[in-house]
Amino acid sequence: MSEEKVKARENEIFIGKKPIYVYINSVQKLLNDGHKEIIISSRGKSNSMAIDVALNRQYNNLIDENKTKITAHPESFEGKAEGDKGRIVTLSNIEIIIYKKE
Image 1 (cartoon, rainbow, N blue to C red):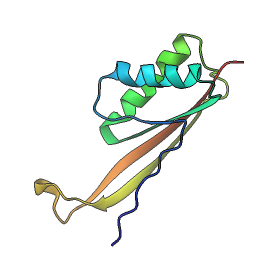
Image 2: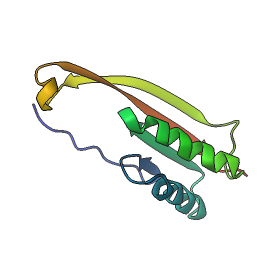
Image 3: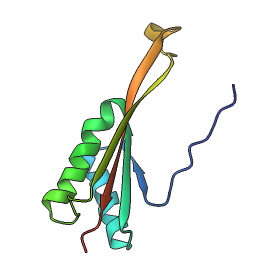
Image 4: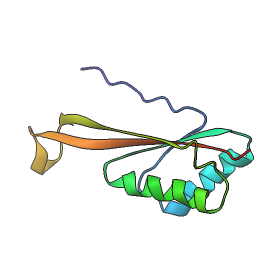
């Protein structure tokens, strides 16, 4: 099986294990750089943090909440961790697209 590299779009932020303010600052930087559309992507346990980042920008009145799009889809793969070897593991992925307020 060949490994595919995920190519990040210029306006996309992948949510991981860093503190939430890092991602909030990244969204703010993209807004300041003139991007009209920002994609916030996460997987598994990080989904709630992705929602928090989007809501933070909404509460600060920086994005248009009427245009926000959220898509979620599961992804299944064979577990590699010691307790999950040989088992099919399903993680949910979430993608939130936010738009800058005009």
